[in-house]
Amino acid sequence: MNALIINCSPVRTGATAEIVSIIAEQLSARYDVRTVCIDDYRIGFCRGCRSCHTTAECIQHDDADLQMNEFELADIIVCVSPSYWADVPGQFKVFIDRCTPWSNTHEPHKALPAGKRGYAVVLRTGPGMKECERLIGTIEHFYSHLNIERRGSLGLVSVEYREDVESRKDDIEAFCKTI
Ligand SMILES: Cc1cc2nc3c(=O)[nH]c(=O)nc-3n(C[C@H](O)[C@H](O)[C@H](O)COP(=O)(O)O)c2cc1C
Image (cartoon, rainbow, N blue to C red; front, side, top):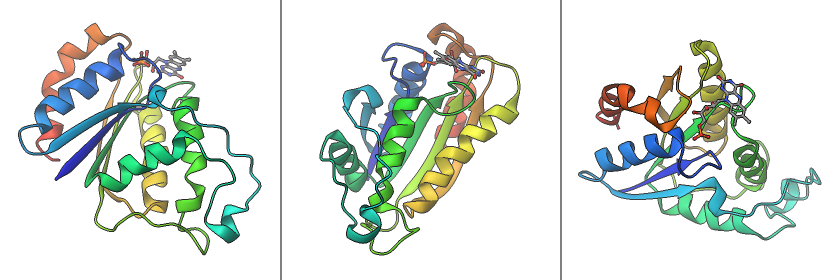
């Protein structure tokens, strides 16, 4: 089975990247793992034209298509996202908006193969878990409209830099055992 782990942060060497690498190491014994970073893709803003509501196609063709190809191939999807202003980073939100041709909110829509399992791992510098729940809500809302089954989530607070992740490694590894 294929597992796709997405660094939803534009930072390739930060706390999110460190968590992605721990998860990749943990899952690699059981799955074929592929990791990507949202910054690997150049994706234009959704223009809100709604033509995909009637055509199931976007008027733009860019790296959003490449990223969706990764989703097509994955059986397991793990989005790992930091809080930027109490939600997912803008780069990842732009990708979510561009997934509207796949959204089950309108017909016709494109559809991913059934049976995909989605997980959300989120982190923030502040101390409260409520903000983590908000990010998890964003990611799970996205999964639900793409018919990706929501299977679990992990929120990590008081994390800013990659060095802060070491003390949370046990929590992350325990979560990986549930995937
Ligand atoms: C632009 C920006 C906005 C942020 N906003 C928040 C926030 O609203 N709440 C919070 O707890 N942390 C916030 N943070 C801190 C990040 O969630 C935290 O540093 C995280 O570890 C960053 O991971 P990264 O370096 O891998 O992107 C923000 C960081 C940045 C760069």
